[in-house]
Length: 288
Length: 292
Image (tube, rainbow over all chains, first blue to last red; front, side, top):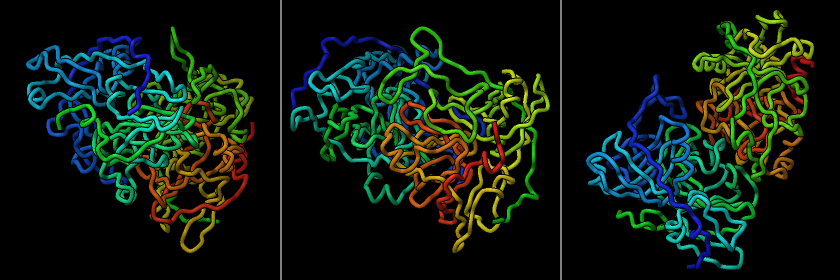
C-alpha cells in the first residue's frame, strides 16, 4: 500500500448535529415500476433494523433502502446543509439523547439524509427524534502529491483504509468491487458532487445480470470510467471516479442503487483493480 | 404522413400561469454557479422575459445557463404549478389575459424541471416588449392522453396533437420513424434522468465538447427535434437498451456538470415501434411558423 501524503494535520474536526428521522410518505404514495405498475415500498428514513452496510443492494422488497440510521436536520436549511456538506464517510457519530445516549457509530453514506450505522443492539434502543452528533472530519482533505485527484466526502480514516497503491508516479490504484458503465449513471446528475448521490439506472435488468451489477452490496466501492465528478457529475472522456454504494435498488426508471463520489480525476489519474472484498464494511471493520 | 390518433377523445383544459421572474441565490457567497471545471460564473438563467433568444436560434454559444427562449411562466402555488407543467404540451396555444399585452397569443415550446419548473412560451418581439413579470397567461392545454391506436407501444408525452400531425414521420415495417436532427447517445443523457417524464426537461450533457461534436449535437437549435437513444421515458427517464425517446430542444446549453441543452420529451417506446431517421433542420419554429 502506498504512503499517501495529505494535509490532514490541517483539517478542522467539527461537531454537527442531526436527528433520527421518521418515514414520511407523500399523498398519492404510489411509485411506478418501469411498466407503470404502482407499488408502495419502505426503505428510506428512520432506523432500518435488518439492512446493514455489507448486505446486498438488490432484491429487497424496498425502495432506495437506507442501511443503518437516517439522520437529518430538516427543520433548518442552514443546519441541514452543514450536516450534508461537512460530514464525510467514515466519520464517527455519537448518540446524544434517548435510550442509546453515548453509543458510537460510523457515517456510511449520504442520501437525502445522513446514514449512520451503529451496533444492532444500539439500533434497538434508538427512536425517531433522538439526537445524533457527527464529528465531521475530512472536508478539505487533499492528496499532497496528486494534484489531479480530488477527494470528496472522504474522511482520513477511510482514505487510509482503502488499500490504495501507487503503481507509478502521479497515479493511484484503488481496489473496487466492480466497474459501472457511465451510460447507466442517472438520477442525481443535477446535483453537486458533495451533496447526496447519483443513482445508477438499474432498469435494464438483463444488463445488471450480464455485468454482475445485481450482485452489488451496500458499502461496495465502485469505479466509473469517463465520469468527471469534480464539480457536479458529467460525462468526460478519459475521466474516472471512485464511488461508494450507499443505498439499495429502486423499482423506478432512472433510479437504482445510490452511488456517492469519493475520488475523481478529470485527467484519469486513478486506476482500479477488482477486489470482491472492496466494501467499507470490511475496510472500516463494521463487524459484518 | 398522417397517423391515426385519439384526437377526438382529447380533453382541452385551461391552465393558468404568470410570467416568471429570474431568481438567484442570496448573500454572501452566492450568486455564482460553477462550471464543470469549477470556475464560478454569473450568467442569466431560466425565468423571465428574454428579448433576444427565440425558438429557432442556436442552442449554443449564449452567455447564459439553460436560458429559456422568449417567455417563461409558472404558478405561485406548487401544486397548481405542477398542473400547469404536466398538462401544458408543446404546440399548445397560450394567450395573455392581463397587462399591456392582453389578448396576445403565443405557443408552448418547452418545459423545465427540477429547480425551475416553468413552461416556456414563444411570443413575438413586439409582444415581449409589452409583457411584464407577473402578467397572467392562459394555456389551452391539450395533448395529455394522446395515443396512437396503431402503435400502442408508443407513449405520447407533452405533445399537442396538432404539432404531432405536422412532425415529419414515416412508417416502415410497422415502425413509426420520426424525422430528427440528431441522436443523443445514452452516455450523454444527464440532468432529468430519474425524474418525471410527464413534465420538466431531460438534458443532454455538454461538458465534453468533443463528444458533443462527434455526435453532431453542437449545431442544434432551439426547437430542433432529436432522438434519445436507449432511453425509456414511459414513467420517469432512464436507461434501457433498445428504448427510444423523441425530444424537442427547449432551452439553451449551460456550463454546469450534468447539463446542456434541455429537451422536452414528447414520445417514447421500448419495444421497437418507435424509430428515427435523419431529417436535418426539423425544427418546430419552422413547422409552426414561429418568428421573433
